[in-house]
Length: 216
Ligand SMILES: Nc1nc2c(c(=O)[nH]1)N(C=O)[C@@H](CNc1ccc(C(=O)N[C@@H](CCC(=O)O)C(=O)O)cc1)CN2
Ligand SMILES: Nc1ncnc2c1ncn2[C@@H]1O[C@H](COP(=O)(O)OP(=O)(O)OP(=O)(O)O)[C@@H](O)[C@H]1O
Image (cartoon, rainbow, N blue to C red; front, side, top):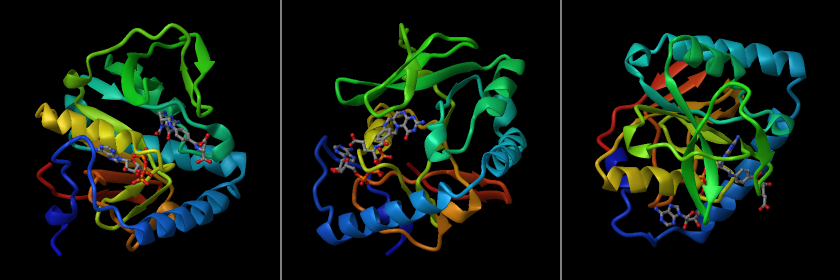
């Protein structure tokens, strides 16, 4: 089946058709890759994360970004560290937001250096006093990845926050560049896909960049 048919543009708010088999397979893959990623030493994790930051800066679209949604990594899970990227974005005067989970949804809040933080319900860092930003003005989203494949599909932690976020934006005809950040070991030939899964435009890893062409 061609990718576009799999790209899971949600027609309404409660997409159906996800198979139990895909769900179980996703869960097995998540466990496996998360366990492997935890084996990265702190030094290797930070080194690879810096290489990923450099590669993001070299993306041809980077100079055009005005407003970027980043994320603050769950360090104990060895998510790609974004401190170098945040420093770069600040240096180039870009507006930066981070995700906040509110009312069961991913929304965006302004982020500045030394922003006072608190811990959100899933352990992620969020602003202590979030000031919402305009998600419709986002040019790019740096997406945390548990696993991704060679078609641009990704697995997160299984809560669907990014899938719902992208499908909401797409409905409003907002299509920020979706940039997955992953270590090379997280990229697989193929992961199971459900109808709601929202593919990425790029996966940036420590060995380079994969680019995908979709109409969202
Ligand atoms: N750094 C970071 N920030 C983020 C995300 C993320 O994946 N990474 N999110 C991406 O959506 C949102 C927060 N969502 C998250 C959802 C689940 C888990 C997580 O660790 N889940 C546990 C189960 C926790 C539970 O059910 O209580 C797990 O996978 O073991 C983390 C973040 C917004 N901010
Ligand atoms: N557009 C949507 N509207 C409503 N529910 C959705 C939508 N997209 C995904 N979901 C729900 O989110 C749940 C999580 O799906 P999945 O296992 O694909 O998560 P994930 O891709 O790992 O998570 P995330 O997007 O947070 O990183 C599914 O139960 C699905 O029904």
